[in-house]
Amino acid sequence: MTLGRRALVLVIDGLGIGAMEDVAEKRPQDKGANTLGHVVKATGVELPTLTRLGLGNTLAMSGWYQALGEAERDDFPLQPVPHPPSWWGRSALAYEGADSFAGHQEIMGTILRGGKRVLFREVSRRVESALKRAGYRVDVLDRYPGRPLLVEGSVVVADNIEAEPGLGYNLTVPLDEICFDEAVRMAEVVRNVVEVRRVIVFGSTGYGVDRILQHIEHRSTGQTGVNSPALGAYDEHFRVRHLGYGVDPSQQLPACVKKAGGRVALIGKMADVIDAPADFRDNTADTGKVLEFVRREWQAMEYGLVAATVQETDLAGHEADPTRYARVLRMVDEWLKSFMPLLGSGDALIITADHGNDPINGTGDHTREYVPVIVLVGGALVQEKPSRFGNCLGTRTCLSDVAATVAWFLGTSAPPDGQPLSAALNSQH
Image (cartoon, rainbow, N blue to C red):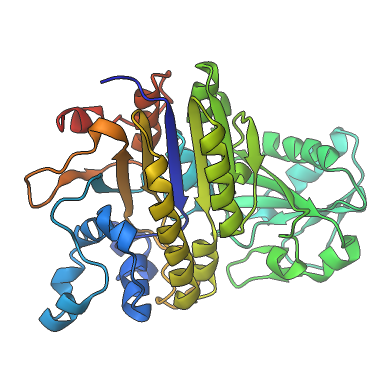
């Protein structure tokens, strides 16, 4: 096929379509999870554009409709359609658990392997020694369980209590007291002496170390750390860097596109968690702004990649709020209707997710679910097929197939993981 010119990867954060089989053994709390099915059932939200693109077809792969009664099935607002103009399927999560950082790395071409699950209290002394060797003043906050550290009287190093136990550590920074670049250097020292999946350094303005200390919490999981949402860190001045274990940003999809001479825009959470080079980067969580930036970058781009994350769906899942979740999905659906005419010949749109976050299951935590993969190619490649099931991609084994497909489509070098959907797409024309 002719090489493409532009690709948009749109991640709807937390949009699961049915629990993976391995949850019975590994995450029993996720049994029965189906984020999309439960949100639509609870709210009756109608998503005409996503329906046309085959979102209901992906939901059917989990057996959702078979589990409904006949009347409920017929009245369900989201239905499979006979001939979507897209290629559609679902993907398993190759990484362990249900985690935004790992999910985004996988989407951009890196399956996270290795790394250990270790609470901060088990490495606190090692981290303390490393920071002191690097010339930093370190105090142990021994009035709290978990042995968190205070660096240079300002930065708290402790468990990431928003993630699963032992997956990562946070450095919480008051940016009115210490510059972000210096805090990143501290985080790099920590990263070099621990083997957890991620070390995150983040901060904002408007609060000092005293307020950070007031928001340290100890959880029943054994984690001790700063409650960053309660702190109010996620505002317009928020800055963050994610330092992953075993992640080489120079090999991920954005770097591949840059090496080929393309422009790269990373928007929303994608800008937070992907450390690869980009020409435009904005980490806003506001859905309206995310979609506005996507359209602006797309229209200004001649050749390249826009990778964006709609995060407010995930936030709604954490809040156990299906109404908010549905409202954000509806916003995305309406935006897609106006965006799709901008897909010309040589353009591709891929819609997917990083994990589930079922607001009905009552936990407020991520859920390990299959996620949709919808591929729409502009121009002559969009065809209706005679099969009742349209252009089914089946079940992909990893999200890195998304990155591999974009690399193939744009004619760039390939990221380390994933298989392109080239065989499936080429068979359709």
